[in-house]
Structures are given as structure tokens and as C-alpha cells.
Image (cartoon, rainbow, N blue to C red; front, side, top):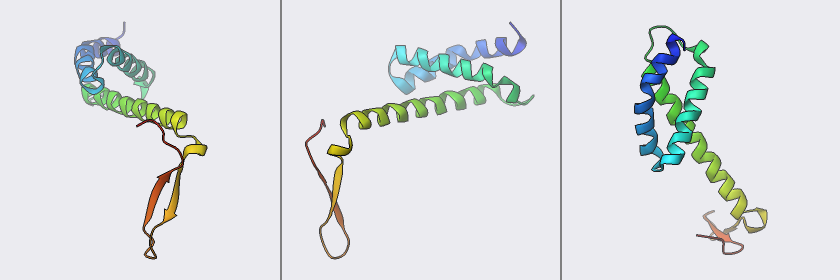
Length: 108
């Protein structure tokens, strides 16, 4: 293992604790840490000497978590709120205020 790998390996316990806090699920936390490590190793050539490795890894894990949550939310919305059940906007007054009326009752 190279020097970069050894430095990253030392940060795994911290990354794992942070991932558990973010996901509240040990399995998803492990997946998040793994995704972070893969991304860090793939992008190691973009790192600059003298920068804070821990801060960089925590930025990656945070951004990866945001990306995963967004993808899960979009997948959920696509599954349960298709075009046929999308909100229809109807004007409620002459001032331009609008209210959303669901075409059908979806899961809540």
C-alpha cells in the first residue's frame, strides 16, 4: 500500500462514525464509507500536497451522502408521483395565488 493509502486508512474509523451519524444505519454507513474511499482513491491525483486530507475526505463523504439522498428522493417521487398523479395548479384568486390539488391520493 502506498503512503496515500496508509493515510486514508487511518481516517476510516472517523469516516465510519460520521457516516453512521449521517445515515443512522450501519449498512448504509458502510456503503457510504466505501463509496467515499473509492472516490478518494480515484481522485487522489487531484489532491494537493500540504492540504488537509481529513477535511477533503469529510467533504467527499458529505457530498456523497447528499447525492445519495437526492437520488433516493427523486426515485421515490418518480415511482409514486408519476405524471398522471402530478399536482395540478389552479388559480384561487385574481392576485395570482395558486394552490396544488393532487389528482389522486398518493402515499403520505
